[in-house]
Image (cartoon, rainbow, N blue to C red; front, top):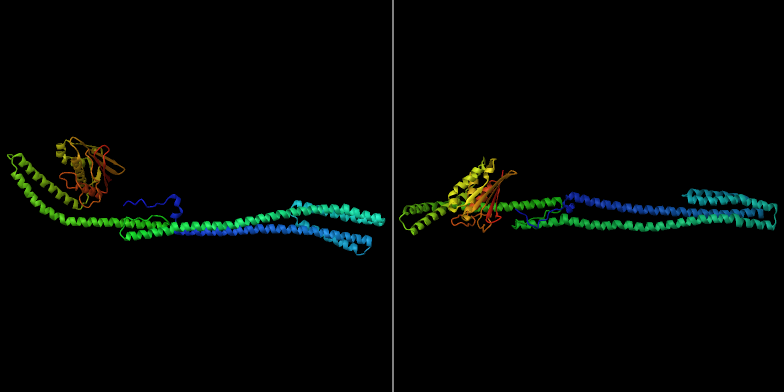
Length: 494
């Protein structure tokens, strides 16, 4: 049964929709797991960036704090030095030495905290200037002790202020500026990390929304819509519309279910048609034999009487009337015989036979009519050397009926062509006449005899040919000939 045009088929662009439900559910779960992993990874990466920046900022703050502590201890150490030499305090030198130890510890701590060459270089300069102070400042005070006057004291203040401390302050300021620049860079990185974290953390939300829309679309196209189509189809089929087809779309299981429903509908339609056909044929089978028996007996008497009264000395009108009676009786006899043959079950008896002998047998029977209309038959059956597998009597009778139709439709002095070919395990026969063409299209599924264009036709020749082709597993097709007339194509498997 041909499928309607509205049946949707799967394309390569619908790969996801033809997968099994378990695959779609697994894909759905994997998407969400990947989304969760991505969100966790994004958050962890943002936390990592923030933590690294915070640690770096904390480290620089400690460096700055240690530098301030060194500076503070240096000023206190200087005070103790002044107290020891100018005020003669006995404990001042001991405290001076304690501050020296403290400053050296701070400088050592600074070296441990420094992470790059630039920081270590700045800290080394601070340490160098401090050691210069430790080495040069006591010498100035001892020189003052050798000449303790006001001018010498003033000279000490100037040397310390403009020399040692000035150099130390310059080095210390450079180190602080370096650290402040790094602190500013860290602050910028923190701000940038914050912006990136917001962007990265917002990305899973966007992906979740996209995944939600995509999941909804997949759910609708693979499950919801196919189920809706299946429900509509089952309602239509249960109402008797066996031509309704379900689109074979959605998940693999639903597509398989749709395909099986369509096949079920086709089988039901074929069964219904076969049942109707068998019921009608059964009714005809009961009626026709009785009618044929009751018709043939009086027909035989009428024909016999007409032949008896036919004499050569009768006038032409009477002879024509008698011949009309005989022809009418013969037509009714052929009609009843054809009807009985059509209704009789066909059981093919297959044998390997020569195609040429079968074709010639059908043509020989028609020779009187061919001579009467001066019609020539051209055929090439002798070119088929290999025996064919068929039923000799059924094929010959089918060819006879089709050739008889072509002969009746052909004008006088015309030609009928029979072309035969055997290839790819298929036998192809075509009969082409030069008549006016068929005014109707034969129906291979017709239950009753079809229309006829012949004066004394029964309308059973074409249905009988269809029935023979069906029993032999072949096909029969009627189509207009290229120039004029009708071409009948017979295809029989071998």
